[in-house]
Length: 122
Length: 239
Image (cartoon, rainbow over all chains, first blue to last red; front, side):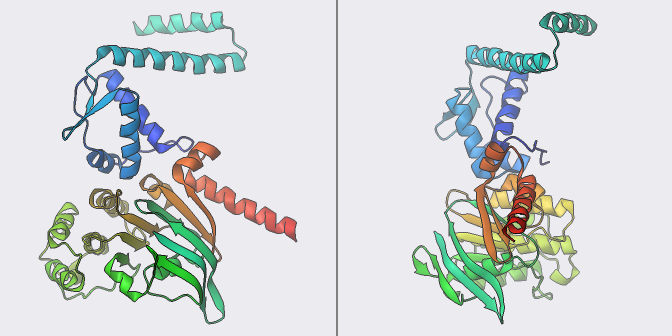
């Protein structure tokens, strides 16, 4: 089925995030083959040019690689996937802390709150 | 690839297109949007060589567009005017006899992809299935350009989704261009590279969808609404 996109962000970026999420969660394993550009475009209901751009950017990030005549594969290099995880984590925390500051909370207050929540989930 | 320069088209004293200048590159999927009567259908027919401009020039790869352009451009009208006594198979054979670039194998593949029976008579098909057959015989042509007038209009969500998927699956954006008029902008936006907005016979904007989201931080629908509002304000200030 076609997927819903957020209105304020380019569609290709949302698709990159979606695939990165799949890789970081392990839904797409290291070394696994991605669907062809067209198959994936049909699956999510976007233009093939958009999907081509998504694949190109993932390759530039070195998260996927294209093997001649075989298609695109998730990198087998675990270090790259771990680096991506760390980078995304930093990004998430930075964005979060900006909102924290904007609403006038102190970092200590928030850390305490997170620890309490963390306890609930353990 | 398609160049329109200062095109004016009148129906009697009414101007359907007023000084339209437009450049359509190869390999793009373009949505043509605007209110009813804004000139979308006229513009598509002009590019298909079905209408002659009163003034201005329309060219395809440098050659003037005439009726003969139909050999390179596939046009799908918004009307439902098939030979209803044909079966789907007979319709495919008929199209194959009319267009040199018609690929019978591809036609059957698309019909199959869209789950329509080849032996069914056109007149016995539901409106949705007639919509499916219409897009199938259009996309089965190996044309450089597909001009689609309201391919989604009046069809239920299932059929719209099928047609969208057929479009992605059976066109090659590396070498083919699709221009489709539509009112379903929100739904169609993920299929598009560019949007052309028309109002009162004039092209008021031509933008890349990614740019709209990147630059204005909104989707195509909100952008179009704001575009119309700004025009209104400018008009009122101009008075």
